[in-house]
Image (cartoon, rainbow, N blue to C red; front, side):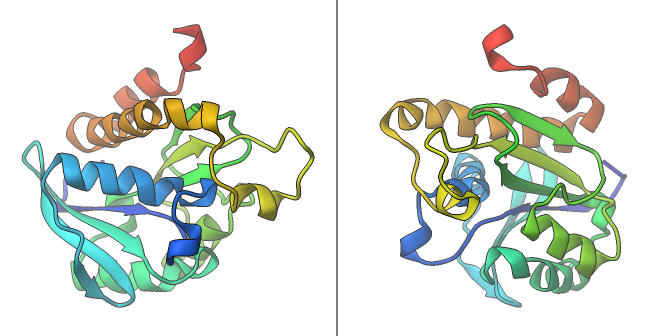
Length: 196
């Protein structure tokens, strides 16, 4: 991460009780756990974003949950970043990824949207993909369900038993990016946990 005084960590999801606990809201879940772990209150609201300020091991952060729907996440995040004078290079975006098996984590330093509409919206709003991503594997449907139906479904019973550990690993990955380096985070967390 660049030497900047404040870093922005954004978790992606859809607002509203009907989406709580769905695969598409894995980014929200990880951010909620990160906030709770470090005593950061996510009750402030600005530019259609729920956010909180605090420190993670001495690093000053703004944790953010855009309250526009997933495919419109970019503009409110851009407004919040501009308000706090945070460059996109000092941003970490946490989001679900159907191309990764459940429990797989993949950290990317920058890049394209990979077909994810939330990331596409952020790239459009910031004028490029110069931000870190923590991709949370939610897998594809084994029953052949449509992608939209799958990501808007809740985790099954077997997955829920492993979900807390998976979200904790995501928080550890974010903390490593912020407090050590993205290279160290990729080396530690991009491996398949079943092969460790």
